[in-house]
Image (cartoon, rainbow, N blue to C red):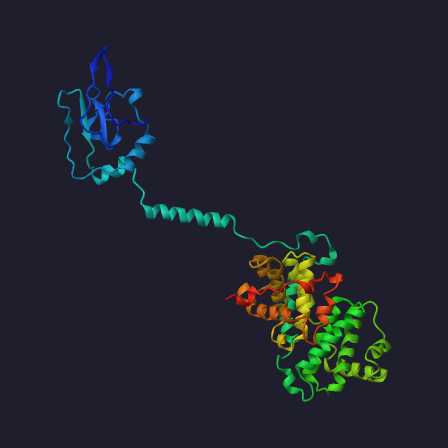
Length: 412
């Protein structure tokens, strides 16, 4: 119920009518108007010094609820210089105007609702924002929940398996400068070999994991064994043969490999190199290649076919480049997927689920991602175009035609 700024013109009292009088000035919001016959101040604060505890009750049309009284008390504080003096109208005692007076600390804390400072309001707002952030905080998705009933998904062991892969990858990686030990070959010759094997792998329609194991076997062998340049292609063919025996159901015969080398090597040379490579590597064929991490990380990224194809395109470009050996397979795969996400959907796609399952943050991947973008830009030019031609087909959704994520190169 609002309080008017002027006194009503007519008031009924005891069946009689008396003439209302106007005050010469506007009554301020911190003043309270009372009828002296009731001897009770409307505001609860003022009742402590004026109204008797068992005094009469203010009529309903004059009452103010506790809620609105509290709001009014907060809205305007009493002025300390005012004294407790009743002011009467000049023409009579019909009305007494009581001014608000300052109370003691004890009285004020007991009866007056305390006003809230701006700082306190800001603290409450900040607490509310934090609580809302907690409610809507991004959570790590259970990417294996849908496969719980699939025995081939080995959901019960999958986390332990990839923890083991992360530990093993350091032992399966090669030194990023092993070419310094080679006296007749270099990184560019390696790139020519891998680029050619990508096309051979594509022509034979082999499994994806076969290509990554082939590259791993080549690098691990060249790190330990010096090779002349005319035998380098033979090393690549034998590595492909061993990878096929490990991964494929139907393995290409030795004569097919001799044929695709334009008969540069004999069957006997192929078998001798196979024996040498297996003994040099101590028959260790079970290593975590980029393919192992690619499948897991794509699942964490909730990828579609387009993202999957572009990610494989980028990771195969990385396989060709000798300089990318400085990154472990899991890191390189995470960077390729992050770059593919940025290429297709823009920035901000690397969520907490990706970070949890890969173990890498967006900031950690950014530098490597810039290198991947550079490889993407040069994929269709120069001599190493095998990967670009492979992914510029309908089978792979023309992934090579995607525009590179140039904005990542300027990202800080």
